[in-house]
Image 1 (tube, one colour):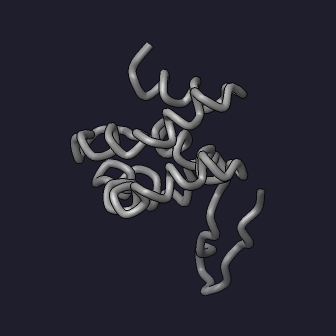
Image 2 (image 1 turned 180 degrees about the horizontal axis):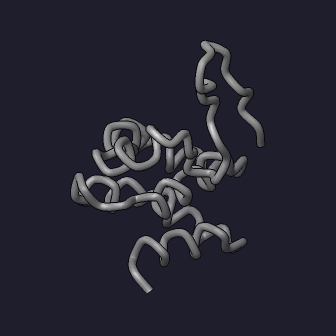
Length: 108
């Protein structure tokens, strides 16, 4: 199991102390990831933590939000997911039709 998988699996835990710890340090693996590294699992973990409504977790994530924003989409993510219209939560973004300027709505 790689460290990204560990972060993602721990983010799915219900233990508040585990989630608080992850919220405090989720920015670190994003910051040290290489530009060509697939960080999809880390971005999923970030999304889980951002959606958490526990005040202590929100405060911890927000302290490092600028770092999270800066490193959230590396070159690999932009090249492999943005062009394909794939969101890190597994949904599909709006994409232009073949011969039209119309877009399909975001679902999910």
